[in-house]
Image 1 (tube, rainbow, N blue to C red):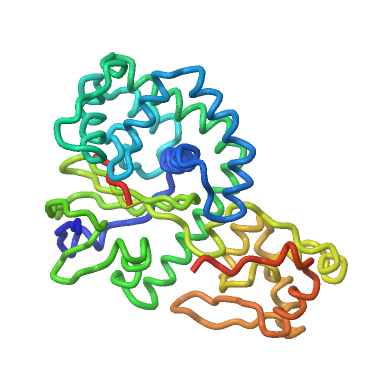
Image 2 (cartoon, rainbow, N blue to C red):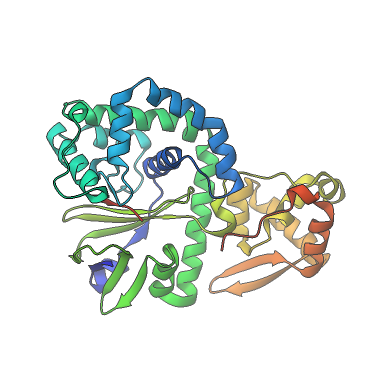
Length: 343
């Protein structure tokens, strides 16, 4: 397993960062894989995958760059610089574009070697100086066509995930937060050691560096760093927040409760706080609060405290009501239980 050694000050000063560039690269990974893990991803792929594949078919060099740079075990370093707090997409992609061409080629060779064998040569068509420019242009294309149109919605989901992680810190401290970022891959080992993946990479001493945790909505994850100053762990949003597609409430339920209130009830298949509901639905805090009060009074939802947060979820009566109003073919799915390194 790969792990990092860090002191208490580094962990105490770590923080969550929302990054449009990380979200865009995660979406590029999703396009490259071509398969989704939940209905929202599959619908997104149906819309955007044909255009992405047509773009690469018309540009064989960039297509080869993607295949080399997004290897199974290791992403080429320059494609995912560690996010910076408050950094815009434009500022982030400018860092990709500014990578020296020789450095980009070296990193692509490393990525290829992890998937094949040490010493695997870089394909001849990638011995060129415009690779960072091509990578940046591809990321810009994915951002403009497939991420930016829904960025405000995605950002609200990412913010909601951060709220959930912060609540977990109140319940179980940093160990609970770290263990939950990427279950089975990221966990606190004790003795100032943080496991970051399952690969047999040498441990790294990161005490004194900046450490950030970066959520993305696709089912993706990686670690990245700029030695010795900045390290990042990118992880997928969990549970109901992982699917950025807003499913409308069943028509009969919307007619009974009103569309906005019905959508709140549908989302509460898994526990969410008021702040998370505001983020996911886009409704105002006052509106969400009123809907929750009505649903509580009707016995359709219940609340419980988790650390400093109050979480709401459907009661058995609420489950029966949603199930009865949902057509069989549209039954809600149960909640889902960079140098760059892959999951």
